[in-house]
Image (cartoon, rainbow over all chains, first blue to last red):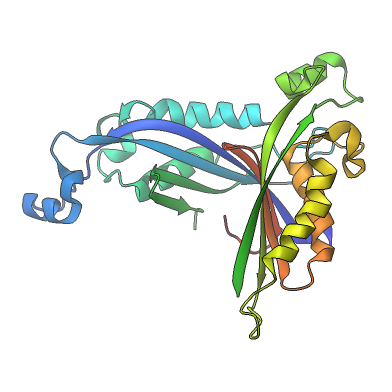
Length: 140
Length: 140
């Protein structure tokens, strides 16, 4: 197998805690309760989220790295964690004023925020809402 | 196609230092990973083999054989070793997660004859891993 046939990916996990409420303005109060159940409770609730970021690229022989971890950490910290951590996602993240902050949509928003990282190619993001639920988005 | 994954843990020490860099450059690029006396990790390796189960045995490959291969090629080489000094395959390379994963891939790949090596994931800590996989498999 040639080197060209192998892809190397760097995976990094980050942690943030945030609150949200699943409620769609397009649905009636009854429909919201039926669709979202307790996630529709009026004052919201929170999770300890895990954000897993995968980047790919050539390994620099001088550093042995796809991308310097300190650069990736700083980028994700600035673009995502500062915006999401210990926030109310519905109230404090502009994207979720109109869009329901499900973890599917959170994946898309995180992907859009990290995509501009220039030192490596963003492969995908994966978010664990709890230890039992996880969601992935690869930009497709 | 079915995949099977075997997990294994080993502990090793390493240090990031490029002799072509000045001491200042090494500290800037590698941060605390450049501390002069090195440091260590408990690594977790996940090896995934893909193939069709043998109709006679119901197995893609015998997990016992995979375990023995990992013992021989990875554990004996790397467990309780200093990766900079005691692993010839890493000589001249910065022993990052990316480079260690690639070395492990190259050690295992030719020796897996039942099924084929699909991916390996090497965790340096629960929040950091490198993954080697065949181009185009496009999965986590």
